[in-house]
Image (cartoon, rainbow, N blue to C red):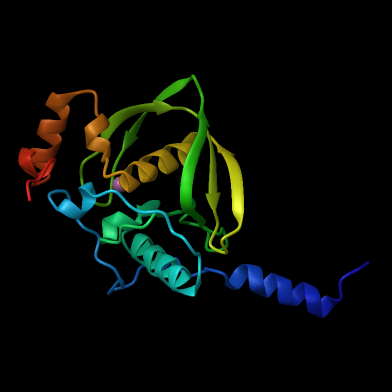
Length: 201
Ligand code: NI
């Protein structure tokens, strides 16, 4: 059976409308991104029990805040919300490329092969350091409509997902840096103190 033109248009509208926001930076982004030294970054996130319109509203605000900061990934704990929600978009230059929304993501498997890649984080602006991680991963998650999904990822997307999933456990990429001397220097040069890495209450 062929679907009518009207049905196709409706479906296209439904898919597109789910979470799409403009990628243009906003002068006043809706959410503040917490910086290294803030305890919120060290608190683990809880699973989302129901993916509803309030979660999609939050996802849109996370996307607007991420795009405004020119980031390619953002985890809800970075904006002080301890829910297992990630937004990722490694193609900031193309307005039509949809972002990836991962709710309750879980790693199913990781590759034996590892890769070194220079990471940065919107919560630790200016600091860029090499981190070693598995090259590719297989994950399960729910999308912004609550649909269960699985995906394989490699390259930059794999790297970004692993970095953002760490945030859900209160782990930051600086915890995984192999050179403590480089870390110390980078933090200092960018206005952070060593004690910001593990702040006390
Ligand atoms: Ni980060």
